[in-house]
Length: 352
Image 1 (cartoon, rainbow, N blue to C red):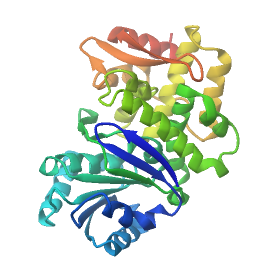
Image 2 (image 1 turned 90 degrees about the vertical axis):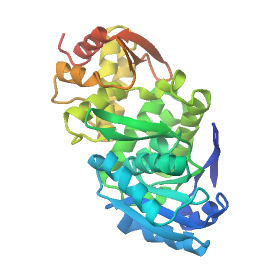
Image 3 (image 1 turned 180 degrees about the horizontal axis):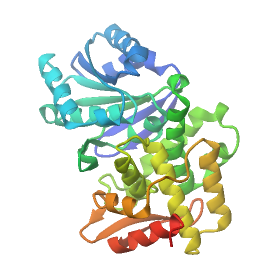
Image 4 (image 1 turned 180 degrees about the vertical axis):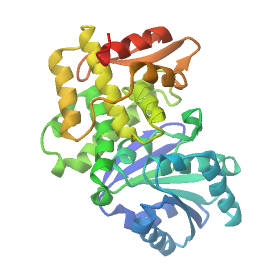
């Protein structure tokens, strides 16, 4: 078993092992005193894996209930958050019990926020079922739901008790969902280069657990240095300022990973034109996105993306922090005026 310790405000482990889903009850049982559990999942994941999780939990002495939402970003909303909490009340969950979030990023975000708010905080165990959730959204304590005004606008920082990553669950992912996760993996490669870049440039099929571990270690390091996203953790937003805007314009028909991929490519194009990165590094970034079947451009105008960026959480009055791509393993956080953001968009989208 691969284990990554995250020593944040809550010290916990990320466990990476094939088949660990069937041993989740033993692990969860060692983390909490209570023996009631609400499993939050979605309409794609629950039919595949919820019973296996429930069986393992029951073998460890837990009584379980399932709260299932429709799959998709639109389900990450305050109404479902309240409904999940109401089920916790109906099922009699106490502060000594546990909530298990079983699913992709929508479920891990919503489940984490429910656990943070219910009775002012109960234990949350994340069991991510998508590559994106394994390498990014289940680790680090960011929990949120979306508002009509923007993505992840309503949330808190709340660390889980444990994260269980079982790469065998990725076998049932649709091709486009796996690609979504690869956008975050490519982001890590852009930030740090190294082993992740080596793996994704080659054939990663036999290195999937190692790839997840390497990504989690990078996320862990940023979280431990800057848990509440005031400084270096903002490196993890590479591609996300434009990406979140694209998601919002599309009414979330463009998936998160696809939007982040486009955002990274726009920034890389802009940085090359500003002589901040080499043409070779820019082309490598674009080629990796294409290799893993991710889009590198979109149909929306720079003006549309700029206007949608106004609701970005990284905005501070008239300023915003962006992540510049200077090469693999060489990125920079830069505070710019909002008016300058559109200049980066114009250059990155060839609309100068």
